[in-house]
Amino acid sequence: MNNKTNHTTGRKSSDRKAGRSGSSTDSNTGSRVILRAEGLRKYYGSNETQVRALDGVNLSIRQGDFVAVVGTSGSGKSTLLNMLGGLDTPTEGSIKIGGTELSRLNSDQATIFRRKQIGFVFQNYNLIPVLTVWENIVFPITLDGQKPDEDFILKVTELLGLTDKLDSLPGTLSGGQQQRVAIARAIASKPSIILADEPTGNLDSKTSSDVIGLLKMTSREFSQTIVMITHNPEIAQMADCMIRIEDGKIAES
Image (tube, rainbow, N blue to C red; front, side, top):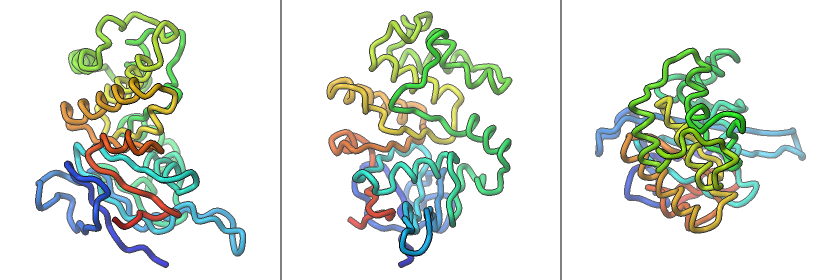
């Protein structure tokens, strides 16, 4: 069955009800739609053994939204994040980020686009142990041959409480501090969107709340769009809005 409902996110909401958006700007808030997925499907196998990881997802996310995607194991939420991040290709459907259709990019173009326009925050931090905090933060930017905006990055690190840790190595930091570095690295290149995959999975409950609070603060301070995957309903409630995935589809509220 084809799921035609288009979900558009917005602040101060949870478990969003169905809505339709026909333009790149929301008529109620005037904010720009930064990410749009239409008819998104990802199938594995065929016939009786076919698995429909995503089965007709339509989704619009606006500039500055902090969105939590929740669902049980196997619901399709991680597959959705991989599709939105250009880490995997859909069987059908389209994804646009900032007006760029991901399916039209070749492999090299997709790699460059991800590096410039998509920030990733992973559960395991993915910091380079031999680089300092500052070097980890600016590494993706310098890898792209660009000059880091040092004033902007210093503002980000101050907000995240990392000012006195910039010369430290990751191994000397706590888990929560390492995740703050990962967040700063994701924000530093001023991407169109940040995708966070279970960013609190390795943290205790208090540190988890602190990290999500910082994510929310950076979203508001820098009008940064964030899509976060989590299995924790308490963490999800801290986001501006929440989307539930069930059996590869966005669940109705």
